[in-house]
Length: 261
Figure 1 (tube, rainbow, N blue to C red):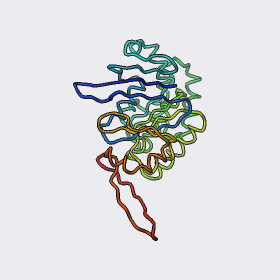
Figure 2 (figure 1 turned 30 degrees about the horizontal axis):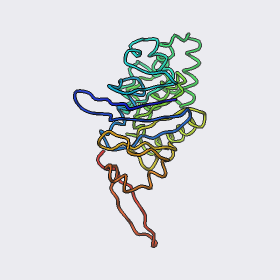
Figure 3 (figure 1 turned 90 degrees about the vertical axis):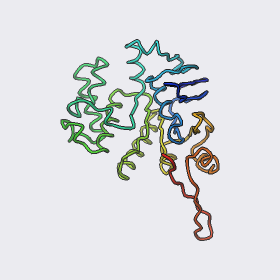
Figure 4 (figure 1 turned 135 degrees about the vertical axis):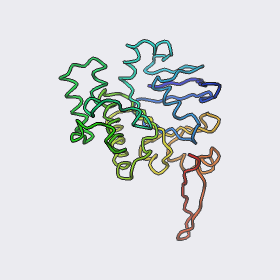
């Protein structure tokens, strides 16, 4: 579904992606991991057509995605209908006067009639248990409620791919647990998930494959998530974790600690 070949990207002289090669199949659940500033968010933006590579090729559904093509409104709409991007900060994604209009915005932009739009909105409100907030202003909602609305906005277009940038950030444990289960169920239903996260406790639940970046903005590992989490030396080398050992009942227990985020 997604093919990225020899991709480089820089802005204002700063290198953000360095020779990225990646294939993602339909229905996969992928985690992007690495220290802050390693290129994870930039890659998500590139996949979603927000930025374009300076060099290299990005294909989605066997079609090359270029800056020139993305200037074509019709082409860009079709891409964004297939691919939903949930930003790290939900406030940057929400701008309408109430939750209903927020969720309806995408379908209306795509030219869907009001009857079908209303059905799509209400399906999303039901799915995310947001009916009671339908006519509330988004800025009056809690962080977890805003994240749900942002997800509903994306799902209203029924995309094939969900791209999520640090979706657990700022959420309380209960909302994190809800989101993990929600994402797992979406993936089981056939949605492709690409998630940037530094939450090492939950990453194995929301992904089966992990892509690890280092501080040179390069991919240094591509393997099953569980296998990557076991490679403590590699995680330390890329400055993703510190290592602490605690002896308990004669066993060596490893504890992950977020480092330098």
